[in-house]
Image (tube, rainbow, N blue to C red):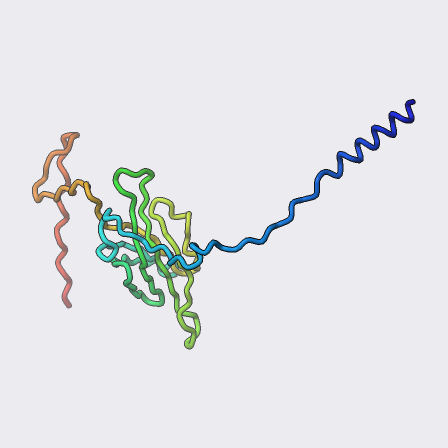
Length: 188
């Protein structure tokens, strides 16, 4: 009786391990209505400054001589400084009512090769973010490139107050420091 029970249990266990066969893949076609759909084009929602009117401030550092330069650029423009060219494709910032605040620019960086006949090499193409500079980094041994600002506005933005020419007391009661006088130019 025990031998019969053991055989019955072994048969039941063997039957559990097989299970149903795996389902077979069924080949399907793309529906007719989706085959010839044209690509989706971006729609200007009317929010913010049009792309052509935005101005990005891009910083460039030459790590060999510790010189830096700022470029004021509109999308589509490129500027050269020595052996580096920065091309701006777009710049964005979050709307005043969105969080977290982000300022970014899509840029391409080209550096001339070391040899006389070497052309321009693209060393970076992507988004750079002011608040998160380590998120996407221009990895080059000589040049460092980063976004400093993207000037654009949104509907409902409050205009920034203009700086007045007089010193006005601050909330703490101290007056602002006067602007430094221009230094005379040296002529020889």
